[in-house]
Image (cartoon, rainbow, N blue to C red; front, side, top):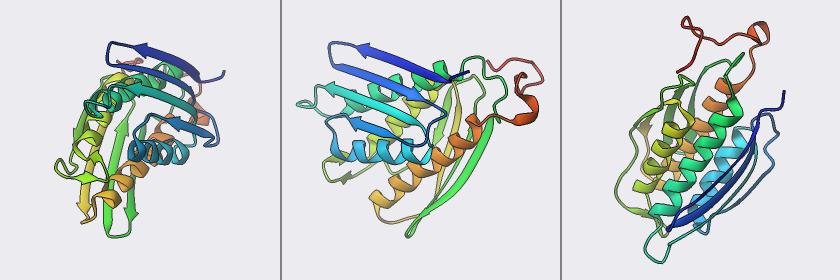
Length: 196
């Protein structure tokens, strides 16, 4: 059964559209109007091996916050919708990913209970991008995808490297977690028999 989803959200501040296939090969088109964020989304979706189209427009004349956060909401909802009942998934995934001097750990659980515990830089910019927005995006993604997300930076000085390592670590961890486990394809991987 195809694990795909289309989600759209429109508010007075943003309009976001996401088309997602969890069982893809990393064919990605991203256009949010926020350059560095596009780079991070491309990195994340390609390394997760998801096929995805992400389009967003927002009130960037104010700042990028609404566009970044609302993209996290919609992409998270698409992941949740594509997972369906979460039958047969590996459920857990983790990765420790380097990017030059930066080293970041990510662990995810498709728990059905969205939460995020994120240790990332909160001050400064990469180009015009406020680095604190990375955590805002990831929190919105985790909450709306109903996953538990842990991100921890072990080392790093360059903020670009730290954030890129974080998005790649999330990609690899989530790729593992959403993968179908061949021996339990019709089971929900929980002693409660539900992920919620």
